[in-house]
Image (cartoon, rainbow over all chains, first blue to last red; front, side, top):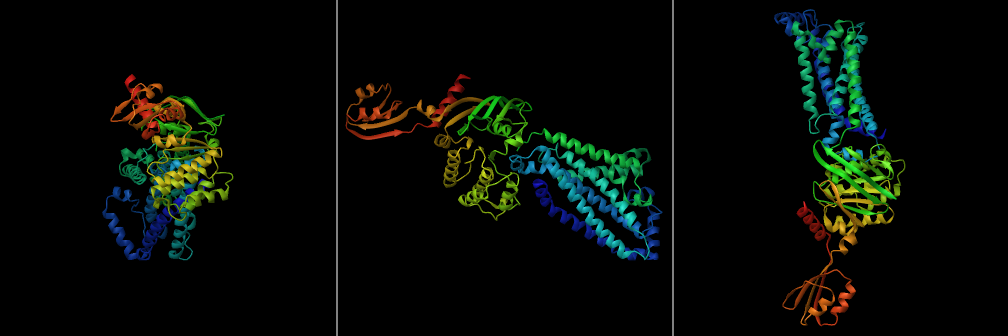
Length: 270
Length: 296
C-alpha cells in the first residue's frame, strides 16, 4: 500500500495536466455545437462532406449519414480525439511505469527496501490503472455536464455516452497493458513519450489503412482505437463487436502476465 | 557466525565477466573492506547480494537467508548506501524518509530524529536540490533508520569533502561498535586501512586475497629514516637489516621487527632525527597487484 500510495501521488500532477488539457479542448469543441445545430450550417457541412471521397470520410470517422447537428453524433465525432489523447496517455503511463525508475536510477532506493518484485509490479500496475480510470471518470463527468447543458428537453444521451466511454476505456486498458509489458523489455534510456506516441500512431495508421483499403481490411485487428471508435459505437447502438471485446480482454491479460513474468527475473542495471 | 557467505558466485552479463567463482565470508560484527580497481566486480558483487541482479551460478547467503529467494527478508535487516545516489528528485527529503520508513514494521522515531539531527539533514528541501554531500547524508539515514544488522556501502566517501567523510566514518564506527556488520566497498585504501578489520581484494572478478588489515600491514614493515653522525652499520646489522641507503649521515631502511627493539638499539647512538613511516595498504596493494601482473 505504501508503494501504491507513493506511486499514485507521483502521477497526480500528470493526471491533472492531461485532464485539464483534454477537458478544456472538449469544452471548446462543444461550445461550437449550438452553431452547428442550426440547420443552415448543418446543410452546408453536409455539402462539404459530399465533396470529399468516401475513403477520406471513413478515415475521419465520418460518413454521409453523419449528422453533426445531432448532439450525440457531434459529441462522438469529438470523442474520437479524446480517445486518441487517452490512448497516448495510457501508453505513456504504462511504458514509464517500470522503466522510468531504472532510467532515473531511483530503482536503487526501491530495491534496497524489503519489497518483492511481485509487490513492485502489482503496486505500480494498480497505481497506473487508478490514474487512468480517474482520467476517464473526470472526462466522463465533464462530458455528461456538457451534454446535459446542450441537450434539447427529453433528449436521452446517458446510456450511449456510457457505452462510448466503456469502449474507450477498454481500448485504453489494452494500450496501458501493452506499454506496461514494453516497460520490462525496452532499453532503460528509451523515452516513454516517444515510444507511446510512436506506437499509437502506427496502430492508428494501420487501422486507417484497413478502413480505406478493402484488401488490407484485416489490418483493422491491429488497431484497438478502431475497435471502439465512438462514432462506430454510436452507430451500432452502443455496442462493440464481440470479437473485438475478446481480443481486448485477451491482449490486456496477456500483456500484464508477460510483464509480471519478465520483471520477476529481470537484472537491474543502474 | 557468517553474515555474508558466497560460494562460487558467478555473474556474467551476456559474455562479459562480472564476477567469477567468488568465495567470500564476512563474519558478524566485522568492518570489512572490499577493495579493488574499477571494473573488478565490486558493484556486481553488491548488486548480486542485494538481488538487483540474478547470479549466473553459485550462491550467496546473508544471515543464512538465500539472496535470491529470501531477498525481501534480508532487506528488513540490511541497509544499503549506493555509490551514486539517485533518489526521487521532486520529493521533499521529509517525505522521502517517511516513504522509506513505511516499508519497515517498526521504526524507532527517536533514533531516526537523532540521525537526522546529527547529520544536519535538510528535511524541507527537495531531494534533487541537495548537494552531493547532503544527498549522501540522506542515503545514510535511509540505510540506518531501521537499525540494520548489516550495512552495505558502495564507495560511500566518493566525492565527499574531508569533513563529511570523517563524520561518516565516525558514525559507521559507532554503529559497528553497537554490533552492526559493515561491508564497505572502496578504492580508497587509506580509509580502508584506517577503519576496516579485514580486507578482501577483488581482482578481475575473483577474490584475490582476504586478510586482516594488521596482518597485511605487519608483513610490510616500516620505513625508517635516521640521521646520525655516528656509524650505525653495526647496529643495523644487529637489527637484521641487510639493505640500507646511506647518504651524508642519513640512513634509510625498512624494518619489520618490533619498534621497541629499534628504538633501544638506536638509543646507544647520538640521533639527530628519527622518522618512522606508517606502512601503507596502498604500498601493499600496489605491490600485490604488480606481482600478480608479473605472474600472469
